[in-house]
Image (tube, rainbow over all chains, first blue to last red; front, top):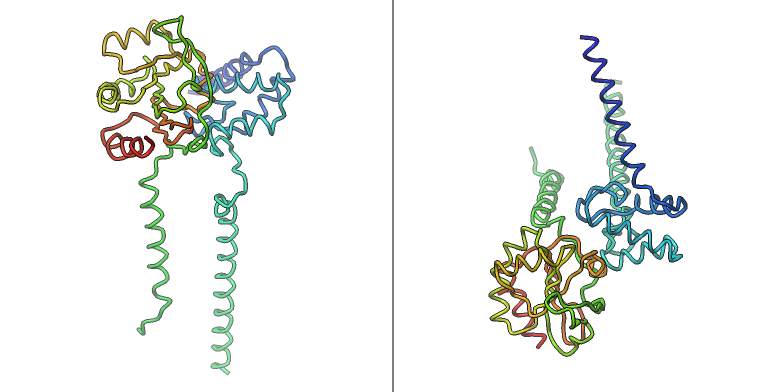
Length: 141
Length: 176
């Protein structure tokens, strides 16, 4: 039993290390370009498999876009310019962090509004309960 | 119990939630609105797949309303769309340019030889570079481009009879 469990754990470790090996293979020649590509592609969405970043995806389009970004970096474009280049083609959706615009205001402000509404309701309920307890005490006396 | 306005609060919250969910049902997260609508179609020039001595260029299409259909031999949804494209090439009377995306010329041409060629012009995008300029992320995709070279409509996924008759044809008539 123990032996079996141990081998399963060992297998899991082996598989995990295998995964790291695959990632390491994709690193190309120029380490400076590759590290910028890695950082940038973690902020960008793969449009084919929408919940993966460009860095993680193995979709053919993601590979093409990584090639494109690599070339743009080599051309001397800044990260902002490259992001703008991709947004011009695929829209804000390629960015994992949507920019604050009038269209996205609800997205950014929504959680805050809900939080404050929650606090407001809590405050009202607590005050009311206090008032009730105070009334009961008055009645007892 | 006396009726009070506050008793309506849970019901109204429920109705608002219901509204959001109903809108959500009709949205397709795979249809990302293209930022290229109402922008100039990206220029490119490419040799024809059918005749290497001739080239196609977006600039030369000025003055015409035309369609750019991005497809590939490996794309199954393109196969579904194909009969409708054949029909469109005969009935619409506007240029239908086919862009064979990330494909080999041999395989692309083989499919058209077998099922028929709906395209008035056929070019290849072997490396997917034109596709990136057009923001292609799921073939088939179709762009409607007006006389001034502005993209007016983008269909993501296969064109259906409904899209053709209720959207594309009225748009084309308006642009001509």
